[in-house]
Image (cartoon, rainbow, N blue to C red; front, side, top):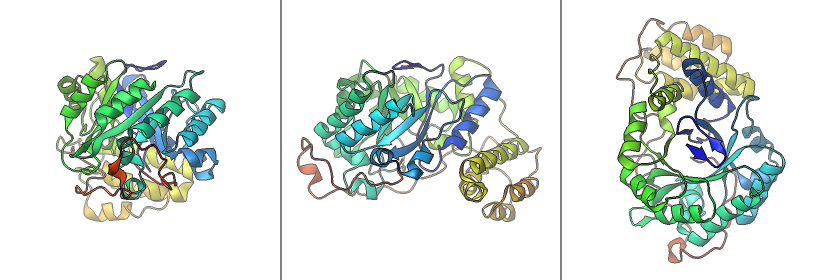
Length: 377
């Protein structure tokens, strides 16, 4: 699959996930794919950063844009609501060689984002959406830094925006579009509607269309592409606690033999490596606090025992992590039942929107206060 000048041996993209897809996690995924398959074939996108915070050089935002020395292509996702801030951020990325690819987030369903008109709320404002995409494309026009756009089906079942968003992004020069096949009202609940990916593929004909939603195993990716005709897949929650999924996807798409699932001992070594990488990125104290949520995902469906799980949820040092992981039975085979959703799920809910937001889809006024720094997904 080609995204502008970038050629991917496997049509697989790691979805940006706040608090997850930092340089430590991306490095781990890439290491596992290389060790199991001999190469890195997909695209690994960093956490989302806010365009305004990037331009203002917020230290925390700049830290989030860290890439490994051998990471290529470097992929950065922007959250933005303002064409001017978008242009400035994209120009900064280009001029300072911060990344090789820019993705744009219009899929975040978090209430504190949508109630200000950002995230999944913004594509409803068609003209503003188009101006933002055009600004990023214009800023990168003289270099080989492709701009892609990720969005949801819409605000809710009464307000689908994905077909318009796809056509607009295509017309404004985006190199690819990706659809999370849920509405903002669904958040991460229920089942992704893959038929909407098929509809977007029919509407957008000159650039790749990628599908996202409910891919937890390699066979799910193959099923999505067969059912929808999409050009590639975006992997979100499916890789939580399963960073070796990208090696399995690489095998599925290249026709290679699937790697053997890890034993519990191998999972323990992966957790240890993840903790080491997080400590290098954040420092040991914050790194160990961050690994705790990952451990819950790693051990989903695996035999560990409640007492050990509780201790791991409080781990504070790498030495302590070593001691606790040593209590796992390394001979246990990975159980076939240890699959299914991990991470955020929740329940559907009415989407919080600014007052009068739905009255005029052609209003191109920049929503006030929507470019504050926040976490999204």
